[in-house]
Image 1 (cartoon, rainbow, N blue to C red):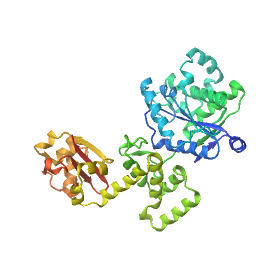
Image 2: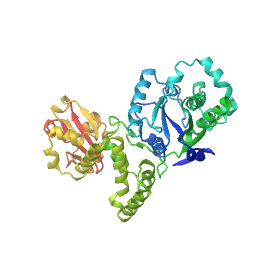
Image 3: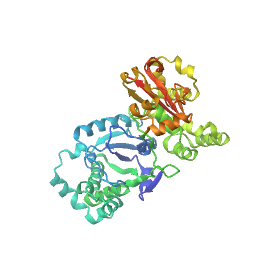
Image 4: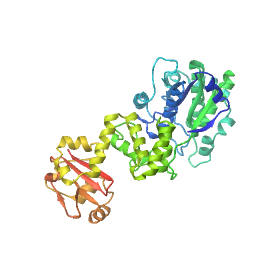
Length: 415
């Protein structure tokens, strides 16, 4: 997992119980799987006997971190930020042990120490310790200044604010280490430099690899966008499927990063996987561990039941489901709500798949897939582009299962 470690960090961690922190950006009211590497860094830090601080950036969220971004982000208002901070807090509590022991985790919000800090005081206290030359040398700044969009003063000041966060936690919480993704190295070392120049103190930095897929594409995205930890944004079923569908190569890497399985357990799993790759032992163990940790065991079991139903059921199995069972079994897949009035007098299948839902982006593509024998309605193959569906086609006059090929399934719910 490690990418860069400042000299002296390892010696410090072997010597005493160390307080260390990672910042989480409250740009949404949920973290997504892109944040999991940092969450697991704090988990491992705590398991090694150290004290983790999770900083939720209520103040920095108002500014926006330019690291790795090609354009400036929209700034959020205070109410949205507060909602986002609360959402992130509740998610972090599933991973870290927030107890009263010497290494119990703590949540901190930098808005608490910035809210009454005047701009003049800040530029006098913080601004004079870090030179513009030092700030300009950072990659996150250089890349943006030389790019087409340039960089606002707001974003330019971000590393100074993050540097002050580290100083504040160093001074108030005896926090000696800041951790983060490798793209944060510049911001983190600004903090260690700020502590050195302002207080002649010593602090350390540790960064982790940015997680990528083996094919070079961005980790944590699916065709539907981000994979979130919040069940309302990404259902437990889709969350489970995301991990189940990673490549063999990625599964070998992810199971080491995102689970706490021992080396022996992983080697044993890899042996079983190599002997029968089609059984997907690595992916199943990975998906189980993370789904239970982020959601719960019932959600994990339901995800398996839903997958079994989708991939193994026959038309008569779908016909037997009552509306309540339909919702329970298939509520986690992509769902489109359609007005019952639009269906009452009958609706053309292609119109339903394009105009009333977005199963297909165009009627040309929908017709091609229907005539190509790739579409099932309630598990019955349908090749007629002129097929008309009425209320009776919907189970309990409310639900319809559309399958596109073997892997893509959509639920249409009448309201």
